Length: 375
Ligand code: NAP
Ligand code: GDD
Image (cartoon, rainbow, N blue to C red; front, side, top):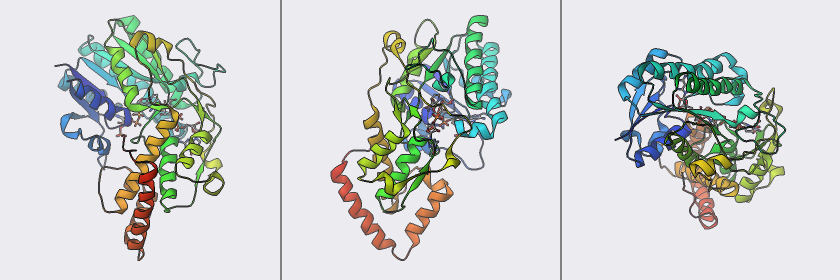
């Protein structure tokens, strides 16, 4: 039985990759950070919490990485742990460098010293390209990072390549473009939109605010993208691969489609607020994954419109189910804004009437989007 260690198993990609590897028959180990409040909701949501072995480790602490490798004795390591939110990297540039950048070196050094035969996947990113000015970005496009996050990831990219060339380690950089899902963090724009549209559709809120709605991204579906990580490590030769859909859409288009699904109107429900603008922006990303298609046999299946439908559908289902008394693993109740709304909803004098309204709205929904539960 093959053994895999996933750093960052509690994140979006971590849980989908864990499920994918379990289905392939792997023994799956994953690292988690000690937090004052545990963060295992995604593992529970996919119903795999009991099927993986969790090891406490922080990527800024070398000794804990060594321990995780010694305990798990992996054939493959998927290094996903990172401070992954670009916006926060402007507020925490040093911390982002420590975790997202130097973390890669700590991991590679541990592999080099403990067992250089372990294959390593490094989570690189389309953010490396910055504002390249090219209509499509591929493995040959020059890098031009425009955030502390992207600069840290560029360092990680080069360290992975350098350990491959200097020490013969099997390291692969997956240059993944944005990929989303119902377990995406609420701070990322796609989930922020799907969550807010769901609340508005169910009459719980009137409007929400966004930053730069003209930014364009190449958005794919996370459960498909984790397969490309595994495919890279199954080859005889290590290499670097762009993984993308080859389609680009603006934040405005994503929002418009989400609103359309719910029968809502932009002018009534969406504002822009300069608080959500970044000091520097990546305006346009669109990937060319021809190499991944040719060498790995990987191609995307879920396209833009379907992705928006999956995300809006699942957030609608969650708000409705919670209001009706169902309890399930979900991130929203941990956020003060959402928790306040849920508490008010459940405790108000008109709660029963509200629940009736929600049920009625949900019935309408059932006829419009019957099968959106595709995590
Ligand atoms: P995510 O949901 O933010 O997950 C990040 C993971 O890293 C979480 O498990 C988090 O743990 C962990 N982590 C953060 N700081 C850590 C530390 N100091 N020590 C140990 N673990 C730490 O990110 P994701 O979307 O799954 O992305 C996975 C990786 O792919 C990241 O490296 C990201 O930068 C990269 N990437 C993502 C995309 C995308 O579109 N999703 C595209 C390209 C590249 P907690 O749960 O405790 O916070
Ligand atoms: N988060 C957020 N919130 N972004 C907004 C908002 C808002 O209210 N309004 C507009 N945007 C714009 C951002 O300025 C950015 O141009 C775009 O929406 C996408 O932002 P995010 O969803 O935060 O993702 P990202 O593209 O910055 O970064 C993600 O993708 C990278 C791959 O390209 C992250 O997953 C990174 O970890 C990943 O490397």
